Length: 352
Image (cartoon, rainbow, N blue to C red; front, side, top):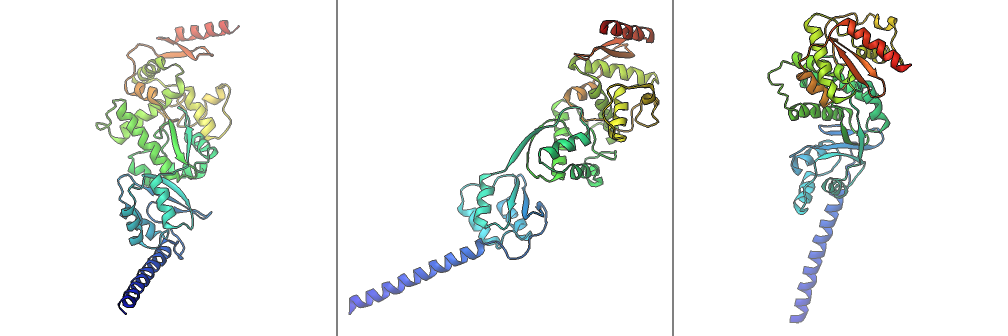
């Protein structure tokens, strides 16, 4: 009789444990499943038309904060289950931007964010490229569409945030090698490149805290012209010195690069192989052959060499320069117009 009672109690306990375990598994399966409601955009979460979501995990953001955003976006069903997973797992979720195919279970999503599995594409944005050329590079690499990039680069809210007084972020998106996720949000691409630009200024020892946004804009515009004019790094500061001397004397810069910008970026024509008299007479504010001073804004993305030269032009007496070696791009610098013309004659003789 006693053994039968023990057996009965043991069976009851086993049944209770089994029932509790079954309930726990059922609860886990229920909360682990994706929500039935349609997902929607929220802060740091973008729902794509193809049935995926781009999720940005901010640096220093807690798992709980991420869970709240995912719940608001309709990607996870229950915040408590998310927090339980975060407590059980020994590793934290990783900062980054992730593209997740929906619907997705909480366990699978948490593992992706914990492992930091981002599909990254490496691409290089060369020095001296324009916004339109950068947009084409990004689209070809599958990062974002050219149109979305250009739209973000002209966003008034972003321009105000970065204190850029121009109509676009031309010149402020640093040319560098980047790792981006495929189908990355264009706004985040622009932010990354702009943040890199300002970080590079600091690394170069350039203190912009004493400059107004308008003064920095002039420096960036100046650097963009230098970027398009120099070929050898040791000539960049010399060229900057020439332009500085010309502006101080009220002379026009007469930079071919500004005319090329008008033809390729404003008129959207193919890049010219050479400039003719009709080209340097184009009536446009960017044409430094007919307008004194700097153009209205940057004409390209300046790199480190051009930026350093713009902030520290060489002290010299030169007022002119012209190419004397088309292969290397080396220039001849002169102090007066007669010497400048003579250099041109020497180039023609050398070419023969």
